Image 1 (cartoon, rainbow, N blue to C red):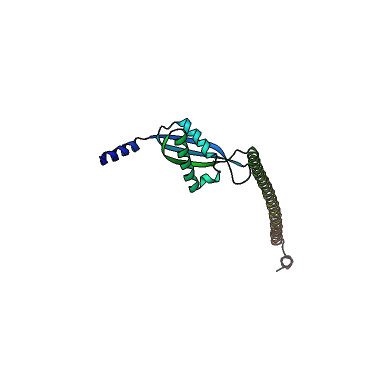
Image 2 (image 1 turned 60 degrees about the horizontal axis):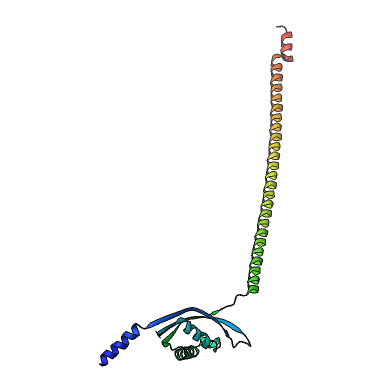
Length: 214
């Protein structure tokens, strides 16, 4: 008989009904200041019998409103909340809740439009600063390129002038060498001409020799 009872309760526990309430949200008073509300979000799972969702949600709203926001994030506060909710629901709505599990509990930050505007404004300012910095860098690169180009052009002109002067100097030297060679040739030719004239013209000794009779 004892084993039959144990098997019965085991079977009952395995096949007991369960109910999940997901993403339940509500506002709770905070200890941070007077009339300060903070939003909380939680997911709960209930095990037992006669689990009507509407009745349990009503019991949940009634009990959770008596807790401060900070209490539900402590172990003691969570256990006290589950025990109070179980007793209240079973007594008022005749539910037969056996266990309550808090699967998830989060703080929900309120949407602040002004904060969003400031965030967007900061992003726009950062984007503008980045664009201005990029533009300044591009302008500096352009100026550097122009300066480098001018320096290259100046160096090229200097090289051309130097080469032109070298060519002129070379031409002058060549012309001087040619003139010198021409003068030397003229002197040589004149010398040869004088030599030939002297060879063809009889000397005074020869003339005297002809005049003396033998």
